[in-house]
Length: 210
Length: 210
Image 1 (cartoon, each protein chain N blue to C red):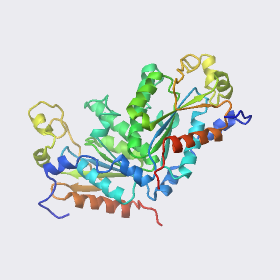
Image 2: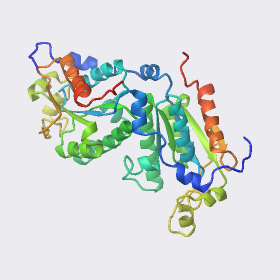
Image 3: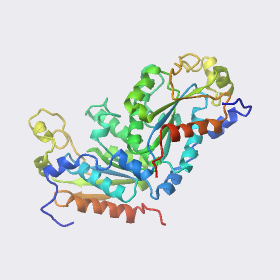
């Protein structure tokens, strides 16, 4: 490259550090707003199942999406954390901060974590802002979750192999005022997905007016 | 919602956990691939300046983008970390894992961190895959960076107020084989941005063929 006298100057550096593309710019490019749909509920309550099916539907509607669950977070970003109360808080903190970056990038984020503590969910809503935070409580009786037990973890918890499993040895604090409640022992997956899409489209006005 | 007999079953849960939207699906939706442009270089070498200007250009070309720098990462996701060698490694590890999630989401990520250690950059390339990792070395003589000193940090380092500042009390390990080298003491910002865009379009074949 040629030598130029007008190369980087101190003032240029100072002025240009700020972002030149805003969340609003990305909303316009995408044609939709960015929100996080935060699923909470016991293991086996259907969080991941609904999240992935919802993502497929939103993608087919032309939305930019991502699902966070144990599979892609616990092995990577939070791979150094265990399941003590302290580590569970730190797990949620990092996920919250990461979600914030994704919302800034214009992406619709769907998260599927037990997130058993009220204080964590309250912190998340404040971090992210109520406007962009949709709390979905997958309400499902413990015995139904245990019957499903897709990963065989309830059985291990009952036999004492796993300690502090949520619902067995560790508390799940039910949401008092979630944006959406789905009783997944009675609703089909399709009904659940449609309910959330309706909420995003009509209540959250997710899509920009053409 | 109505009660249905065909609500969530164990097998449904097992089958549906996997992602139903792939990185390739998102590439098709966006019309471009996702890569990370990883800027490395001394403080004051122009990393953030070029990254933000590059983002603006890519956004105007219709790309989905995000910039990570100290401003949006050090205060959030990595707010609990300091500047010891151990914390610097953990900082880069978390950023790397987060970048990986963004690439999965189809986003072009531009990162502006000193990232002084060769071992970290090697780890990043392996984590992310060479195909999606573009290392840009902002090469700039230390005295030029010090003259710019937009944040006044070199002065503090020289006077001993800041310990272990990269280039003063702490080592910067130059890349041996970066994908792009820019001498920001001679190149203009516009030239630097255009060089990277050309590389992404022609070498990385970033845009899908219509």
